[in-house]
Length: 217
Length: 221
Image (cartoon, rainbow over the protein chains, first blue to last red):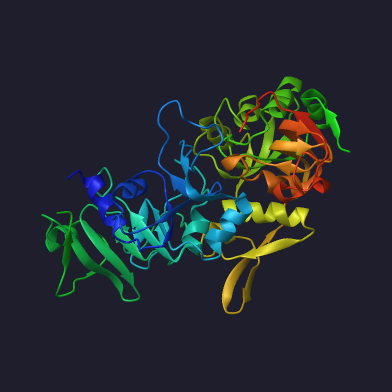
């Protein structure tokens, strides 16, 4: 299975029936293809919709129906539209059960950096700071190392933070790590990956429990 | 009754240095005709309060492309390289504001509040230089209201008393911006007679609205 699809599939297992979920742009959106049939999840897009449906077929796009990434969407029968202040009341007010975002860096205290590289790239935080602050669980989904092979899971983030101490779970192509008060716990390994592989690819210290699950088969 | 004017008349009210609160999200729900008229008139030194800098040829991207914007309070620039280049070259002064905070600060101005307390940005560079207030054991940033001279809004239907409805995700920041303009100008796809909108469907009451402009873009249904 493709690495990214494997991450998408593993994200989907985090959702419970009845959850309201906000998915970040890119990798996190792959999760929608893997939600189990008996689990009903309502997706929010912060530009003002709950109940986002699949992309429309070609020629069926509506100019006034987009998600937060600017892609065309449809609305499910239970959908609702609302303004941006209400949308962020939903987010900041703790009414979103889970948000899934990509990261440039994440660290052992659950700090997240994903909105700027000083002097290089300043796209702005958009809704990410509010999402990470307000969602009940904050799941980071990303490849374990960057394109140069450097660990993105650090002892301490060096880039400007998106939020402090809010990440609850990290899902990568190598492992699932739980953020705890004691540090990062290696909860699961991707099939074919060893504890040594993960330790080598992770700058942060890892807590290795006796029993470690697997995913990606 | 609210006065119906042309996009050019709307743009003529806006002067160099005006502070504009502009509706839309990635140009969906942006008042494109009014923005075109501002570009046509070349009004510069503008301050822009908007969710995102949109696309180079759509939404507020058109103002940026024509170098009409001097400063901005905005949450996302990622879709527009021109604004990033202007910012990096020191040509534009940008305050990046978390999107939820931006909306509440604009709403606060329209609602007569001095500002808001939000946990968003605590522990990040967003809190730098701002007052932190602990309430009930939680730290909040005191974020001041954002004033504006003009709100430029896109609506789906407007009746002639200024009551507004919006369409699907084109609603986004429009009802919030509409509250916050000292003068609020609404570009509507349909301008209808009083009585044609059910009071139950009105999203923005006409009390917030000063002028209407008939949009060239007209969607049905």
